[in-house]
Length: 116
Length: 424
Image: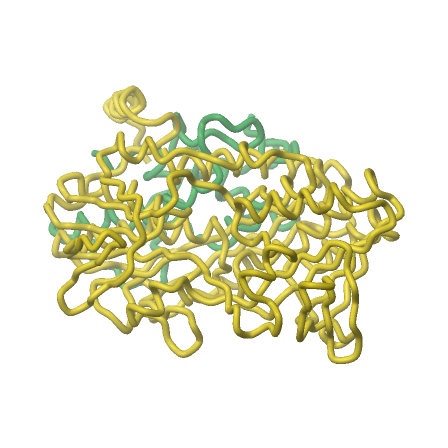
């Protein structure tokens, strides 16, 4: 059961696994097919993910912890925030600005995926 | 997405060796560049920390004249006697532990062509890239009668510290039945919802401690951040204690007289018992003397790298930069610092910076136990910042008290997190 802020129940969640390559963000020209672009990809992943620590760390009582997260769960949670049309929390309002690709990048960053 | 055992081990290893709750940042650049950061607020301190992590071999120097970090966010709670200034005060020690050279001096000059910064001691530092995060200065010349001497009588309390304490003490010393007057300048200024959070908390203080007293807000604008939420809160909690007067209702203060604590509009002179004058603002002095501020008094930047469009190799972040529609908030400064640090590391590695998304979250207390919020998401492609349509916005109106108390609890978590992210 996934619990979002203000006690929104996880029963309405649609578990979705994301195929990152099939869901590119759309706004930017992608040029991450060559190996030398990997540093740039790491930077882009980080640049999307660093916003989270502006509110979240591991000492919060109401805001979710920053570390120790699972990427698939994070993607489901963030996508759910984005897609719940009647959601009013800060996370709902923020998530609406992100594409699937950008959400996946944030999940990768928060689960240290860029360290691979 | 993969969640490998290997990744878990990486996470555990990082957790053991760095601050609680920090994410493993990749070292993007191996460069031994000289990176100088001027200004140790939410922008500059964050930039220093992230640059050291992203370019661990670089020489990272932070120039900040104050020995302690005093937070503006939450300082309105101090003014309302709900919090102490001590609780707003933090050490820079973890930056030093992270390998950052901290210089407690003022930068007096930045010379772009020779890439040098001169300090008050006369010492000069050479930089490859400079991050300028000078915050705001007041335009002492634009509000007649309001200068640094007048601010000792009618505090601005718009930079946290002794001014915060002064306004708190004046409110405490005021007799019940007194009139508190706040003057709000035209935009842009640091922390757009800040005056109205302050008004709310002063309203709470008056209602509970000095119930025959009143706060009058004289505003140079007709609209303000989170306006319907604040107006709803004032009508509910402080109908007898807060009056707001906008520009269209003769709210613009054109002159003040510190000897009599009088604030004058075009048509009226109002004598205050306590006067809080928030002056018009501009980028910090060093930005203006080093040629990175334009005619507006603020600093135009490339939206992707935050590099000055007027001076190469100088990146301007935080309140001083022109990044609208991003607001001049602590959250913006902290995030701009992180994104700027990443792009500087990319540049040092010889790669091309890419556009990304930035966002902002800002909580404001309407009572000591209730808060409202605003959020926004911003694209920085196409050379400028633009709000992502359909995202962002304010807390719901006419919401249950539980929503307001939940956001107050979130605000407290936010404060702890952003302090940790900024100072380690």
